[in-house]
Length: 261
Ligand code: ADP
Ligand code: MG
Image 1 (cartoon, rainbow, N blue to C red):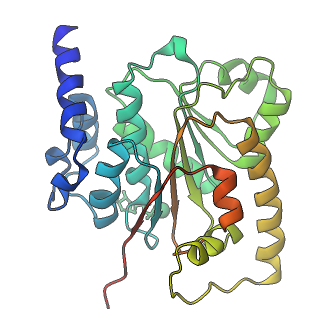
Image 2 (cartoon, rainbow, N blue to C red):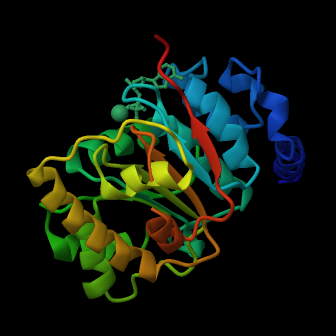
Image 3 (cartoon, helix red, strand yellow):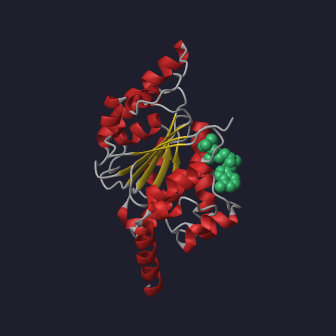
């Protein structure tokens, strides 16, 4: 107990200056708990990718993040590591309910994210669930209220918000979102930050999908606590003032990794 609380205060102290990790190359150099370090090592995650080096220290310092880096650059760990770590630091337990939500635009991506979470979170005592539809709703309803971390698709999450008795997001500490490459919200983000980037091309099919996604997302956001920390990642450098306002990002740190030519 004492050892754990010493560890927590040391980690908190070291996290206060995210700039100190600008040249870190290894996960082991970051202010992460032994449990997280162990999970990462066992999953063979040793070296940091660029987006991880930039985003994780800021997220550990409590900042909201808007991250952009191309597919394959390691965005999943850039939000999963802070989620695990910050819940651990908050001494989150089975009695505290839902502490973190990860929203993924597709089922496939949600499954992938959940697999990574299971691997790196194996040393933690937090419970985690995958909510993507296609499974029995009643069985899911019994489990969903016991989860500390949920990885979900927007449609199924909203279904639980509407239909599951006792499902409560009011205590939520962290929201991680993995945004659709052609999502309207992502594209608008670019304008917000005044980035001179070529707009992503949207075809009609994408537009329709995005509109449904956005509507569902807005309904979800309305259910969440405003006190949470938000980690938003996308494959395109983008944004909307309107949508950012909806997500209630607090003075977000914009983290982009540019493709090397
Ligand atoms: P993105 O979300 O940016 O598309 P992913 O998070 O899916 O990228 O990671 C892409 C691939 O790189 C995955 O196979 C993942 O296991 C691997 N990967 C991510 N981070 C690291 C790392 N630090 N060390 C080694 N492999 C990594
Ligand atoms: Mg990926």
